[in-house]
Image (tube, rainbow, N blue to C red; front, side, top):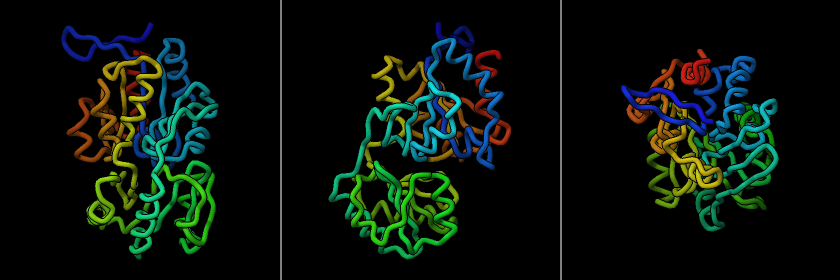
Amino acid sequence: MQDQFEIGEGFTMTIKLVATDMDGTFLTDDKHFDKERFGRVYDYMIQNKIQFVSASGNQYRQLRNFFKDFPQTLFVAENGALVGSHDKIFRTDVFDDELTQKTIKILNSLPDIQTVFSGQKSAYVLDTATPEFFKMSNFYFPEIKSVTDLATINDKVLKFSLSCPPTETEAYMDKLANLIGPEVSIVTSGHGDIDVIRADVNKATGLKYLSELLNIKPEEMCAFGDGGNDLEMLRYVGHGVAMKNASEIVHQTAKYETVDNNQQGVIQHLEEMFEL
């Protein structure tokens, strides 16, 4: 039987699925989480048939590594472009070839942009990328290759991940939206990081797929986030939670708030919600 909890006077909600963003949300700034503390929450969710989902812009392989000790975790990876479990990829939403080549041509024309081509088989960066960018990309995309030309890669694109000067993030988002057009959505988690994804793909579309697969209604879902790529997910679920450190638009979107990521706000909110 799923957990019910009070969210207002005389009203209870049943939670059957919990989804969380990773960077700035589930993970501390040094990219860790309290495994022992989360393990108690995870065991409770398993016992009560509450599905746990890692919903992130990060690569599927990286997310599986984070939750290798929690085998029933599901994944909405690459900002919704890939949905799967530890053992199986359920679905992917890729760019068509024309959009891929158009996007690569535009990205190559912008000198202050460094790009990760995130594909179904692997991620790819140009061999002209700075060592710092390659090292950072390798953390988020453990399966990554260096190539001489993004346009010749024999793989399907799930998304493009970009790095730009942090103070120019908004300007580059507007520029990319104008140059590439309505076929893509331009989202950011802040700090000069931008994702280019298909316009019809986001974390909420990944949760919608799981809603149909698992027969769980959106109002029976809880989600946590801190950045612009979490907005659709927070709007989609019945119990959306902003981190204390979230951007202002996230606070305006989510109905609830928890403490910041460095205080393990996701785990604390779940402990309170489930009375653990």
